[in-house]
Structure formats: structure tokens, C-alpha cells
Amino acid sequence: MPMRFSCLLGLILMTLTSCYKSKPTTLRVEVKTISGSVVSEANVKVMGVPPDNSGNNLLLIDYEEATNGDGIAFFNLDGIYQPGQSGVAIVEVKAQKAGLAAEETVELQEEIDNRVELVLQ
Image (cartoon, rainbow, N blue to C red; front, side, top):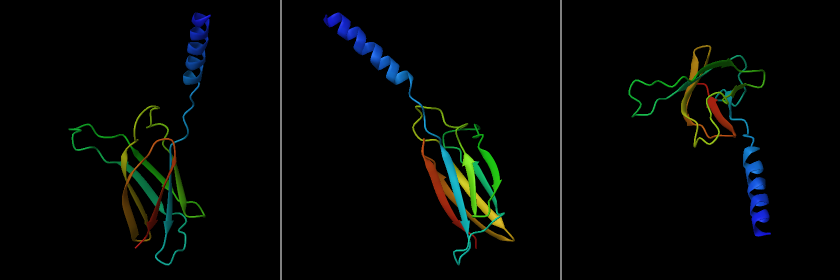
């Protein structure tokens, strides 16, 4: 009987671990003015910041998107995240429109909706 129980328990554990479905890894960038108004059609760029020990290995993170009518640019980062990976990347987020600009460096976390707010100045 203990052998059957062990086999059943092992089968259940294998089934549960093989069915793990990762959640989306995204970045939502909200662009505003100093007065707090949202900025539509602002150009938002997301570029990878290589770690100090990377040598010449550049990160292939280079996205560009315009903000929508709510001042939000949305990036799906599932292509750069591998399930089981701890952390995703450190990226530089830049926004600009009509001569105004803002930027911030962000450490992305896996399987969540990462958010950043940029204020154009």
C-alpha cells in the first residue's frame, strides 16, 4: 500500500508542476505633464541596460511605442522573460513630445504589470 501511495503522490506532484502557467510580464508607462495632464501621442522608448559584467553582450531590449489617448504606452515583455528566471531586466524608459522629455531607469519584475510614471519637463 505505501508504494501505491508514493506513486500516486509522485504522479500528482509531476502533474501540478508541469501545468504551471506563467503570468504575463508587462510594462505600463504613463506620461503626464507637470500639471498632471495625460500626454497622448508621446514617443516612449524602452532600452535594456547591460549589467556591468556583460562585456560586449548587449541586451536585445529595444521597444518603441506611442502613448494612447489616456497617456499610456503598453509593452508586453514575455519575449524577454523565461519562466523560472529571477528578475527580468533593468531598462531605461524615455518619453518625449514637443521638445519635452523624461526618463527613468526601472528594474522589471517577472510575471507582473510593471508600472512607471514619467513627467515631461
